[in-house]
Length: 317
Image (cartoon, rainbow, N blue to C red):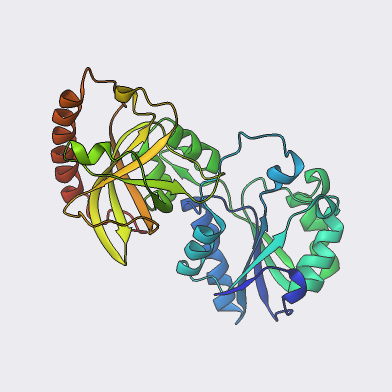
């Protein structure tokens, strides 16, 4: 997949089949759009193009709003799109100036003159351009004027529940990993560097890798203990992760600590990725460290059993 960080670096493509959107959390609804994109491109000997934006528009338009948390970093999004078979990924630098571009200017200057769109595939209820003025009806009016066709993919349902990035975020914030993963079609993940902690886990027989997540906007699931797969050095390990403030030792700051099964090497400054399989329990304040140690033994046994039954359930592991 070719990746472009500027529309100026993009060469117009004959028979470009295009979709646009933020594509946060490349979920099963997005994959339906991508599959249709590829189907059309194959039928007209064209190339697929995904147009997205960075930073996320809300971060630019509402800089004081710190509530937005993203499902995918740009690196994760790029990897997922590449794995899905997209030919071209164009990341537009989203600025306040760009946000003032009208829907007509966007269609004419970006989609048609910049990319060469012959077919535009969009998701349900898609809006674009200044003040989100562009709509499906707007696109259908402009299509014959600029020589492209437009197709809308209807809302995708799983058990009659419309899939959206918002629903996935809400599931993760409640710790409902199974629901989030089913919507995503792959295991939700966090990546970061291993940093030095207080080494308490080591003293009770459960050494942990303390993960400093790279992106401040990456969504962290609800506090609690999770069964996870851990990727490092191109190898995969079973493990469990605790997200929380460590109330047993009166901790105050949020930490993400991974206990990696059958692994005891020192890995400070290494990048690791944890893939969430399921949530085991809430974070609990224990009366003493011995009680915590006994619970961790039970957690580890439970996680090991769970992970043995969930091998590669979703793509992305």
